[in-house]
Image (cartoon, rainbow, N blue to C red; front, side, top):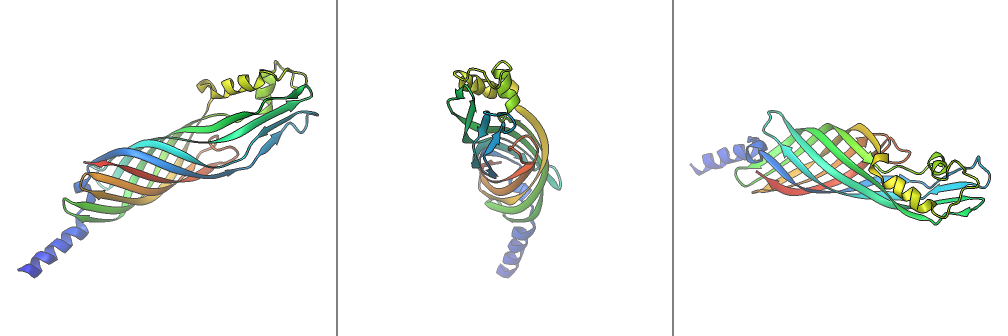
Length: 232
């Protein structure tokens, strides 16, 4: 009767796997990187020379994602992301100060993640929700941070007497050349909530990335991420 139908429906809603209603998904992703970088002043051991990399806090990221959950027990996801913020670079030697460079810390990231559902809830053919956690591998290409050796080379080896009139342009060209990006790999873990309504899917999750040579003077960083796209 009616009671039995309600009972059966409640069981379906509770136990049917969300994977039945989301074989794959793709879409756009935005992120808020959580980091605080202090100003660094280099060259204290060379009289009359200072190289200052300015401070910045947090970063904005944007990218795209793809996930597949047709594999039993686990889901796989791949996302690409660009993240960055701005800061100033200043240099001075006894000849004079360099014109400041309004520069950008930028990193281009690829994440491969294995996910597993912690809890799921489905309304057949209409909506689904699940809490999940994941572990994965990541790859990064990041703009370098200016250092004394870099500046000295651009000044022809003369850090004290080199002409700084065109140093700002040469330094910016060097640091924005992809051949000079820092390359690194690492691992990450994440946890979040995924919602699906009809063909639309969204996710909100926290991710911690463990990788050196990405954020200056840090061995890792956290980020809050939001995704919106289509599930099939």
